[in-house]
Image (cartoon, rainbow, N blue to C red; front, side):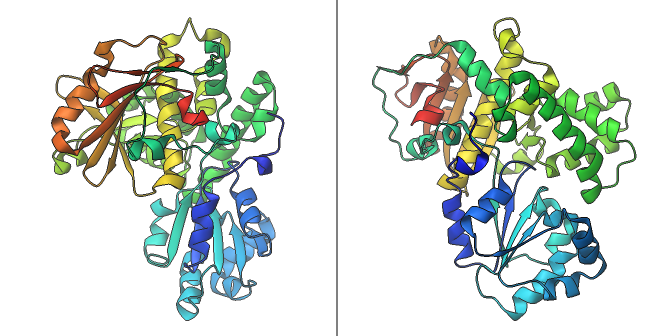
Length: 415
């Protein structure tokens, strides 16, 4: 718990090094303080390093982007590039003149794929590596092989008990989250770090990607979303509760998404066209931030189990999406909900191949818990490749349907 972030293994280093070996520009994108700069320095220690968090450097980059890029050493790591979007076009010109791989390693604390300036500049010339806050597998120094094992069809159905941990240990993991810095602090000090982190992002970083007159409105929206994590996104209801028009709420949601503070998980449907119009779920990617905003503490695991259940769902979604970064970046993630309100928390697809994941805070597994997985499997037919029911117990258990398996949550980080 007290180790600096540089000592945590980051499996996404493998695809990053592969990209630097054959692509002129590579961008590591992810939220602030998740370890992007550390990863960049670790993977490419001999490169020159320039940070746009330096105000003097930032002014030069904004005033004369072409001249700034021309003056950069080669190769170079350019940190926090979202602060000067005009650099993208200048980097495009430089890459078009010299397409040697690995020339530019960029980092961004906003989703550069959602910045309009990027569509005109680096398309086809850049590869994106998503870095997330630390997963539980990374914190445990595990290979993080659960997702790859699931995709390979190698999860075993024999009854096997894992090492027992009290429920409070799972609650502590949820409340801690994955940002390296607060992991070195007491729970009270970690919550203070989360609050200061969010305040800085909303008051300063938002201005790099959008103009917001009232940062307090954005903060209130995020707090409300934390209380509705793992629920269907109801923009009209959010608009009424906040006293804002719907267009403003939609714009604020887009800003929060660009800063990696929320994730909209789209709805899966057998008819691909209908996926575009069905309602997404909203998740907060980091369970520690979500717990702070929702006022959840470890001691409330039993008294606020419903809220912890929602937090746990978001937590599992995040763990698996992060594992995809070093397992198979082409995987896509959804939720399932049909007209009968039968749900599956997470649907994983690779082409038409489909897997289902359900999450239960309970340590006891009932056959009825697989109802959503059965419905999803019926929808998919031969394309359904398997289902997992995560629970907080200690045993791996087969279910009556041989395609499903009840698995302890600890498998996410100890496999």
